[in-house]
Image 1 (spheres, helix red, strand yellow):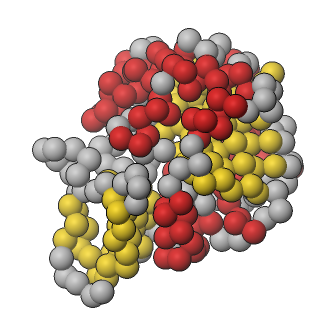
Image 2 (spheres, one colour):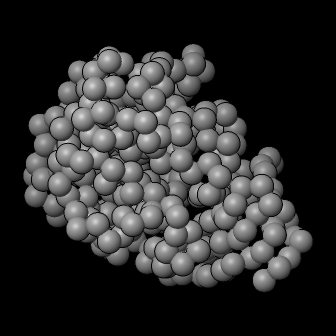
Length: 288
């Protein structure tokens, strides 16, 4: 449906962004949330969940590359990867770019997100949905993590909404404890922790919870234009502190061996290493 109306993001009560809508593509009230997909004049197609921007075709690569390549290359030999959320398929696609990945399990609670992404945002996931290494489950990620065998995954990637509504349970002490149990000896988990200029409490609180289950906790940053407010933080929790200390040349060698070097638009070995060096205001919010 063609329109010249504006969509105002509702993440913050007193500040935000808006998009001029070129064409509304879908508006669905699922069992979990309100989902809107529209075509913008500036950012390609956009998906909102409960009024909050989740992904745009124009800048999705920043978030997806950093959420995926950083943990996989820091680990260095991840064969089994668990993805919680990420119903648009972008994380799945980039996980499967790594030739050493043998299995990628994606658990998304809202099947409508997957359906709408396949129909209206097909370029985000590409052919990932049909990759033989992929197992896509429409179900509760909390239950999956609770029931997964110990040591069954090397990396967990959580791509969720903020810790309100349907995404709240993915930020609890119980969730991180179960994640630590299902991870292998060198395992690690990453998740989005919001924009600390606006959501410092989210970063601080989730880091305190992660620290109860993991030896090494930190955060790294990515500049995603449509996650307004400055740097986006991605939470990091690992069983081995050495994973966060891998140098540029080793990361470059791992990326080349995995088949991802030269395929990215944001991630580089230098950005990988530099992303862990936090501006003081973010380090303070993290508690460091």
